[in-house]
Image 1: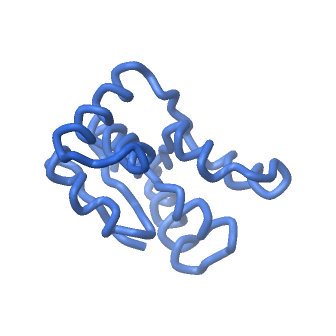
Image 2 (image 1 turned 90 degrees about the horizontal axis):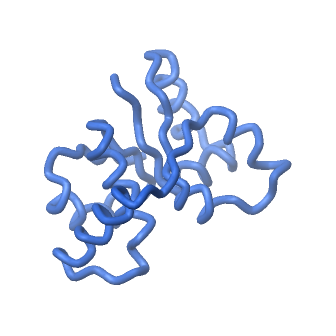
Length: 125
């Protein structure tokens, strides 16, 4: 497995010690799959260094490169989605770039974005 791209909801679920999120992450890590997060997700999730440090150590962080930003923006434009979906679009763009799956707590948010990134599998928490 090439890894899993996590959305903000998964990080919140980990922070709140939700058993399903913990189990899914443990399975990924046991298989040697890195947990990828675009910087936009980190910004949306980050509130307290003390609480977040434990989770952040497990993550492979990815900068918002011009290529990633353009891919996310092109998807938003093609699907006529608003800027409020930018973080989700960067999650999908990173998964497409890495050829891996997305783990989300809210698959409805990603349903339309799959059309712009047809090779990305979205798995719900």
